[in-house]
Image 1 (cartoon, rainbow, N blue to C red):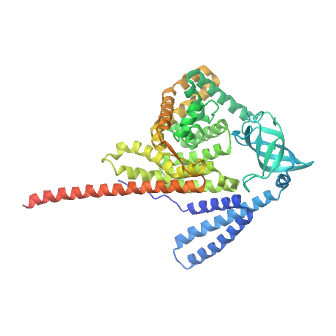
Image 2: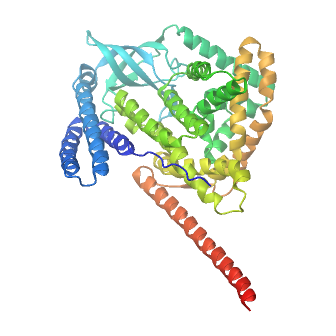
Image 3: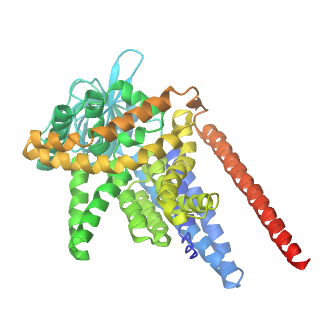
Amino acid sequence: MTERPATDLRLVPAAIGAWAACIVAVAFGWVSALVLAMVCVVGAGVAATLRRRGRAPAVALVLLTALGVTAGFAVAASLRLHSVTTGPVRQGAERGSSATVVGVVTDDPRRITGSFADQVVVPVRAHRVTLRGQVVDGSARITVFGAPDGWIDLEPGAAVTFRAILAVPDRVGAVDAVARATGPPDAGQPSAALRWSGRIRAALADASETALPAEEAGLLPGMVVGDRSGLVPAVEDSFAAAGMSHLTAVSGANFTFLVGSVVLLARLLTVGPRTTAVVAGIVLVAFVVVARPSPSVLRAAVMGVLGLLAVMTGRRRHVMPALCTAVLLLLAVDPALAVSWGFALSVTATAALVVVAPVITQFLAGTGPDDEPRRRPVLDAVAVALAAHVVTAPLVAAMVGTFSLYSVIANVVAAPVVGPVTVVGALAAVVAVVNVDAGAVVAGVAWLPLRWLVNIAAWTASVPGSSVSTPTGPAGAVVVGVAIAAGLAAAVLIRRIASGRRLTSGDRSLSGRHGTIDR
């Protein structure tokens, strides 16, 4: 058995440091970030001295790089936040001024239930804000709260003009201001790309409704393009309880399945690598447009490509540096990503695929009979699901205050059909644009695996104690993390005890045979 090459983790400290710097800046303000930068500069000086003296030069170089990157990100984030907190939009928010905002919707509207009435939360990138007759041009991130009428149907990329009362956000650097809309927005004409995207999404929904029962018809668009509008509430609740909600949102897995299918088909047709790369790139961009280019979709595209690189090239050693580079670039563009749950889940799940899953596969391979090549696909599927659960469960607990006990089993059992459903659904969407009835025929192929997923979620949700409540925030992450660590330690200990017993039994058998020969 060949030894697996070690994963290159040298950029990990730098990525973690940059992430921490952005968290400090966004959560505690630009002054705190500058203090962190000064501390890092002092630490970098110590690391440089150690390196010059030849004391652990490799470690000193990694430490020097990490501290330098952390200091740089802390300074950059503090400067950006200083300009935000002292800018005219923030000053207007501090005064509670009314404003006319012109901008673009950047993500899907989200409905929330309040004490008095339902509201919709819409993130907007403003490029013009009029405050008391003063026109402020420039980019500003604004979170809009408004009544569902006129807001709930907006799509990412839609141009809007609206009047609102500005307020200061709870978090220092997450957005420039909060806006409470005084009425529905004036929405501009969608771009050609958005119209094309909407046509494909509508065609897939029509084909699904034509070919499938209600539960499956609502699930297919969610799994393919993240369209959850037709999802039956009972299915949505059971998927949440089973820890399978990620299947109904666009994630890196969607891009891995679709682009991976294109690459495999190109290989079967003996298409050259350059042409394959071009076609795969076109499919990637097209799917981003269809899924709608919100920040979460763009992050999923980056992580999906990295996951595909790890799986199809086998060069897992090089994927971790690529992931760290992606993290650094994304944080450089938008430091507020550092406090985004979606960003944290995407990064940790991708890292688990590269670092943790191979270790779990190797562990599982040593616990069964000596037929690893035949068991490898099953072991890999279990390892990927378990690795993703292990690293993301503390974050989920911190975010929503629950821990699903059976989600690993549910996701492992569901895993074999997720890829086929995604690919069939994407093909059905393309065909349905030309002819809905033909698209319905293709969508009908996905009925059985969709039914399988619905049944898995329903069964898992019905098991008593399928999820337990945990504290939210850091306390929940610590509680779940400690519980998982204890479980993993127990598994390792049990395996070592079992391995020791097998070795002892084998030694006794051999000594018995030799004793018979000696006599």
